[in-house]
Structure formats: structure tokens, C-alpha cells
Image (cartoon, rainbow, N blue to C red; front, side):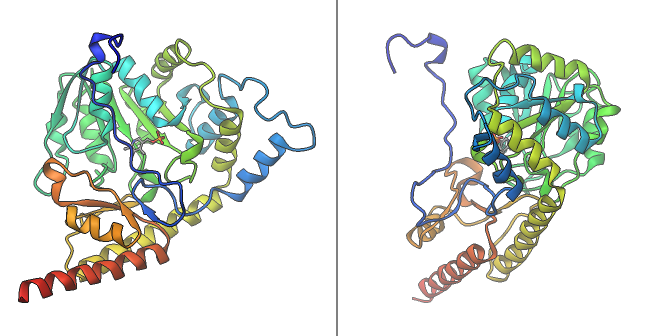
Length: 357
Ligand SMILES: *Cc1c(COP(=O)(O)O)cnc(C)c1O
């Protein structure tokens, strides 16, 4: 760090993203990306943006209101367009939310690694609430919070989801606090709380196109909430980066939302693969946390992570605290998961033989 860095930032510990190797040799199951391509209609639409029929590509500034995307999302969820904002990934939306409502913020101790980083960056006072031994979030722990509540549902990296009644309990017991529900993984089995927006003016729902919509590289996220809250976030966006989504990203978002059939098919497939994979792993003697997401948390630690790595399989190891004996495995194609199962079979066999000796 240079001697010029603002003093407030000297102690900041940035988020560590999962490894992004630039070769295809790996079975890459470490950052919760979708194994399937986005809707083929997205590629067709992008081709016209750059196409011979006079497409301008990214030559001009994009629409700062991202209207086409907002309209598609609002239509999909049956909301008014004033209740939707798009971000450059949901990370940007979360950053706006911290700036708007993060003076004091409460989130689960085990959750998305970015939450404490944002708290530091934006100098918020934050409190991390422990989970139960079984990695469950206890809704009552968030009642009458002293500040904004931020919960990922399903939670990451546990995969556990809260039912809608529990989310509603948290909302009802925080009438004067903002409650942010990060639904990055909601399309893999959980129940979205978007319908509650009309009844709770303190609810902000954050979602992303990175996981269920196979567009992680496009950087598309969104928030949905009552009109006044969306105005708050737009106030920040237009004071920071009005052109926060490229033309390509706005177009991709619109087309992806419109292709409901394709979306349903790939999410259904991933859910099926996850359930088959989790039970195969349990049959091998692994402890797998029940997941409603496109990943599972498995009770095997550093040595297992290394064992898989040597076999060309990349999974996420957090390597500290409560998660020291766990790895998070993204759900890929059935073929990918078969490789993990084979490797795990070998792993367990070596352990058993080691014990006999
Ligand atoms: C992946 C993820 C995000 C961020 O996704 P973007 O790619 O920035 O849209 C946000 N929250 C959780 C819990 C995530 O896992």
C-alpha cells in the first residue's frame, strides 16, 4: 500500500474471490456459476447489437435507467417498474444498500463473505449473529434489531433456506428497520419473498443473474422494493455511476427474463443434480448440509480440498473458523458431479485403509 492511501482504508481486508483459472482443464465447482449456457436467445440478441444490420455495439452510452431490463423484471414479478433497480452485479446493489441503510447493520456470522467487507469499507457498525450448531439461522435473533437486517436466503455457503413465514416474522418484528433479503440462490428451490414487498415497506429483495441465469460475467443484479426505497438507491446510483450496466447487459437481462421456458428447464436440472449428488455423497459417509441452492456444504476439510485439486476438481475451501472442516461444492453437470463422487469414493477408501494400518 502506498503512503498516500486514505488512513481509513489501511485496515480494510478486501473480499477474496474464488479462483478463476484461465484454462479449461479444471472441473470448476468453486464459485457457484451455472454449468449451462444462458438462453440461446441471449446470444442471438447480442449478435444483433453488434450485427451487420447497423448495430452500434457499445459505441454509445447505455440507458442509465436500464428501462428494458427493469420492465422485463417488473413484468416477471408482477411489480410496478418504479419498484425495480438494476446494478452492475448484485454486489453493486448491496454496496448501494449499505450506503443507503448500513449505518448499523446485522447479518449472520456465517454468510456471504462480502457483508463484513462492505461494513468495513463504508464504515458501518456491524454485528454478526452466530448460527445454530446445525448452521441454521434463528429468525428471532433478528427481531427488533438495532439497525438494518441483511440475510441471504438461501444462505451461503450453507445452502439452508428460511421459509416465508420466518422472513415475514423478521419483517413484522422490524417495522422501523430495513430488512434486506439477498436471494442470490432463490431460484434453486427456496420461496422468494418478493410478493411480501407490497405488504412490508421495510423489505428490500436483492437478486442476481450470475447464478440461476448463467450470466456471471455480464455483471447483472437487481433490487426490488417499494418505490421510495428504490428512489433511495437510484439517488446513490446517480451520484456514483449512472451508466452502471452496459447495453449488452441490459439486453441480455431482458432476453434472459423473457425466456421462461429455458430458465425453468436449467434450474430444474440443477436441482435434480443437486439432490442426486447430495444423497450419493451421504451414501459414501459424508455429512452434507441440506441445500436449497446450487451448491452443497460438505463436512470434509483442507486435505479433501487438496485431494480433489490433485484430481483436477476445484471446490471452495474457506479455511478458517467454523468452516475449517468444510468445503463448498458447486453443482455442475451430472458428469462433473459423477467425477466428484468417484474421487470422494477414493478419498473415503484411502481414509479407511489408513485407519486399518
Ligand atoms: C454470488 C452472490 C452475490 C453476488 O453476485 P453478483 O455476481 O455480484 O451479482 C450476492 N450475494 C450472494 C449471497 C452471492 O452468493
